[in-house]
Image (cartoon, rainbow, N blue to C red; front, side):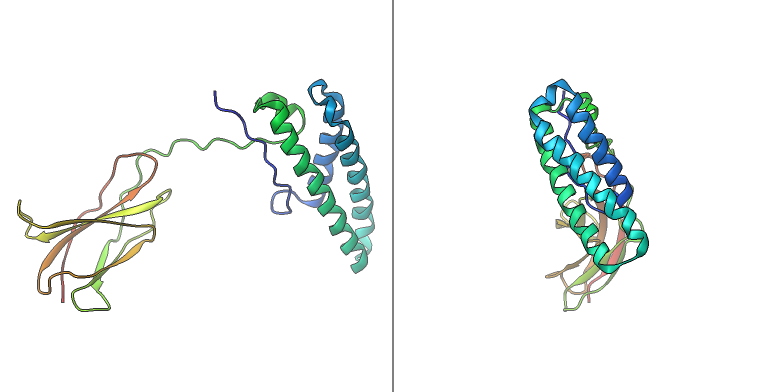
Length: 208
């Protein structure tokens, strides 16, 4: 069974000030009362003390004083640091035991569900490229695609047609060194965790 990973991010992007204070209070208490974390008494007490300090500044924030805001932010930074340090220790002590991590009051990273086959790329368009003998291909973004594969085939397509397979992480690509006056069949597929590919409908474009 895969080990759970403790979330170590306590920034404002994840926790509001009040959420951080409440979370810190819970973690401080849980670490003190969970036998497996008895070696973390000092940092647990430091978290409780800093959470109380942070809470005091939150109350004073009602006055809107700039100096109070600065002190509050400094207190928050100290509290975030203590929590991140404790999270690393909990990860080590718990050995990835999700229940034990949650008992300590921390959150765990959730495993992403398998995505499966990606959607068929839509709105594939070919325009003359910036140089002679080039095409600029674009298409709509495919959700969950890590990169895109393009198949370029001389048209009309026969067994002797020259095929190219190209890839890019963007949803557009310039293809150079094509034969001027030649028609090409172009298709695009998104690539993700699933090895399968769902190709777009092929479009035909002439190279200038």
